[in-house]
Image 1 (spheres, rainbow, N blue to C red):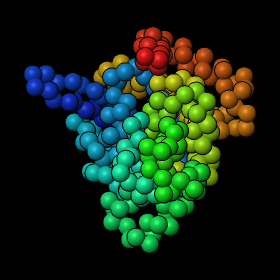
Image 2: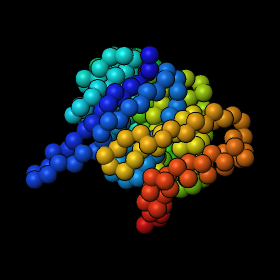
Image 3: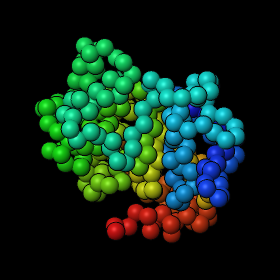
Image 4: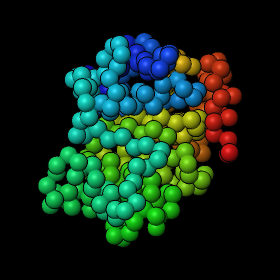
Length: 262
């Protein structure tokens, strides 16, 4: 049984005078403890996939299941990390890390213990009493990760969480996400526009077609997570393979335009 399954999923956004078909006939299974990357052109439904998995949207057709159960709303052990961090500037680092626990009604003593552990995992313990405005972009993203870890999530959904960071900070956070997955063994789905990031953090890389999104191809990436993988011939070969797949889908030009500095 898959930890996360999309079964012939379609999703339509209703507009004032038209509808936008974001996904259609999406079939995908993610195994327990498997890290999967999702890549594709802008507007192909990548973010919609994650919102459906998180229970924040409902599919128009088909079904989304977590551990064999239909997703009918947010679940306590699913965590969603967004590009915008979602931090409250008037709350301290510690309070921001505990926010998800507070919303779920976790008792104060348990909240403090879980928050301290999550901040330690991302190296922010000494900043627990600071405010988000006092942190660098990389540290704010670490805080967003800590908030997800505090929930003790078994399913971690990430929507381009590192795209706003500079190259060195981005690689540092990629290493952190990899190390956390090695330690915790959670199921992870990462949406990204970066080919290299998709290969570095995905045991499989799922390529979506242009809208309406469907699975165009799945690239196996068995060496992911091995020591020195980023500098290995296998890494560069897999990036080249993925670039060729995206070119077949007509997505490479659009991806390049999306990640160019503005």
